[in-house]
Amino acid sequence: MSPIPLYISLGAVLGALSRYHLTLFWLKKRGSNFPYGTFFANLTGTFLIGFISKIFSFEHGIPIEIQKLIVVGFLGSYTTFSSYILDSANLLRNNRTLTGFFYWLGSPILGFIFVELGIWSAQKMVSIN
Image 1 (spheres, rainbow, N blue to C red):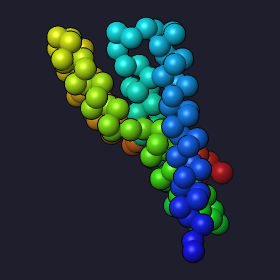
Image 2 (image 1 turned 90 degrees about the vertical axis):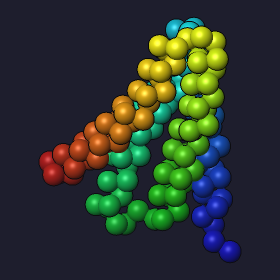
Image 3 (image 1 turned 90 degrees about the horizontal axis):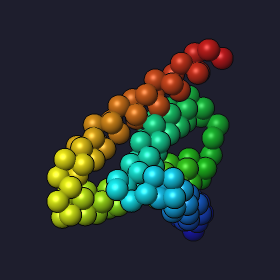
Image 4 (image 1 turned 120 degrees about the vertical axis):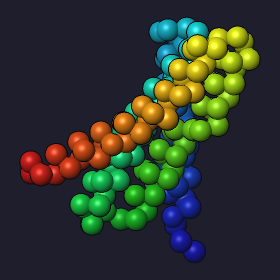
């Protein structure tokens, strides 16, 4: 049996715990008026998934288990679409229409920009070395 599911599981645990602690950090720092934790996780996670997937395309010696641990396990768990949708629905349900609309629309638009920034950053870093 392939060990890949174990690597993905380990990454998922680490990603979920990271997102949880990040959410607690932002709740203490900024309060609950906006889902800063999920928003921050989604933006940093999309940057990292772009950056790391590009690095993996250059570095062919990285074992597939490590790639799956990071991209599928950690980042898949760290950035969660379901949390994004729930946060959007809660903002809209609580008549925070403008904030909810910004969060709902801003997350995928800025997420796309951040994944491209991650890819671009990786390309620049690799071309320097």
